Image 1 (cartoon, helix red, strand yellow):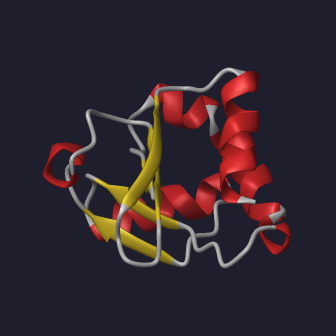
Image 2 (image 1 turned 180 degrees about the horizontal axis):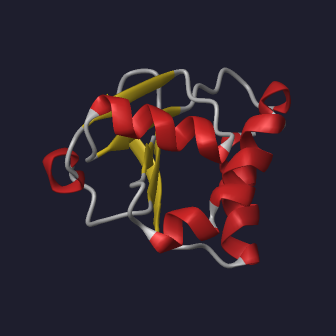
Length: 104
């Protein structure tokens, strides 16, 4: 689950990493990408499209309403909805690698 915002400069700075994750989705086991954004649905979808991000699902939600401290937050959730790991903020390369390793 990507908790992002069209108004977040750190989210925009992370778009390349997000696109890379999505482009390599076929290498991951049973991974779906979902996004939660605080903007109205129309604005959220426009931002996601403009950024070249491809989510299986997009919802409108404030970060704190879903337990995220802010944007960006990446939350790895299993098929039962259990949170396995999470990452907060724009990630340095070593944490990006940890994300990839966690979803493989």
